[in-house]
Image 1 (spheres, rainbow, N blue to C red):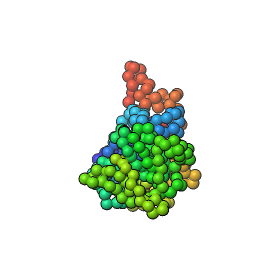
Image 2: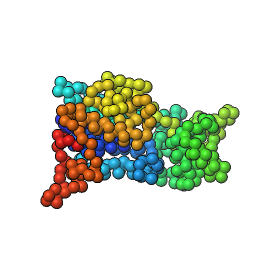
Image 3: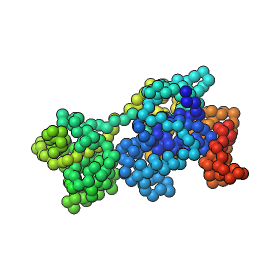
Image 4: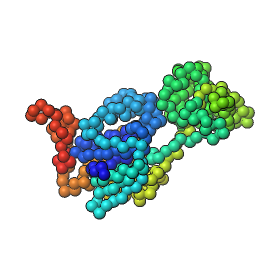
Length: 356
């Protein structure tokens, strides 16, 4: 049975940074994620989409951000459990927690930190008879290989950020691109919408207002998308690939049954500690809610820092935790492996009983 100071549920950017903040305080973490690799939404939904609001990083892709976070936490040697879902959490008499995963792994943890993003989520799918046979071949609900569309005719469906972002990212790589949305009102960033209209006016892409009502795919090969305009007229749009970005069905999954206080399918937390209603269980990132909550990666990083201090205080209530800085603290530098000992070797991370 793996034993650790904290089990972090979720290996997205906030979950990974949580490992870093725990490590600075000398706490050992295991990370559990239902996906087969780290990254969460960053890798699943927009691995190549540029991100511009990470402090001191002018631009990076979702995949690059995850790679950098993995490098940053390497000194703390977290144990990852991919392809597993925590299905049950039980508080033991000792105050520690026993967690059970979908694959039968049992964890013994001093604290639990939920960093599950949107929780269990799935894309809203296209409900036409021809769709099922085309999924992940010529019908896509996420983009993992943009080069797949190089030189092809594509249709993108949706009116949110994902649809607009991928339209702008792919327009120069494809032969033709048509954006289909049921209305001329968009939920995306105004700058992206303005850019899309400018590209349409320049003849580099098209926008069609209407609903997808069918696909023409003889022998399971996509030839065209049938779109009904508001006038009722159905038009065929030739396409070799269809990308559908209609958002996600977020759900907490098993977490909803753990007896934690909820508000609109999100976990209520104390903003001083990011503790949930159950002592020893914390929540950071998009899965939590509180007055003034902003669902930004950088907000999640802030939450992870405060949560780490609270987790250590929960584990060692009789010890004081001193704020130190990585630029000047020998203890933190030794934990990071950047300060050699007297023999010129990097020292191992200090035990969790040391104040940080």
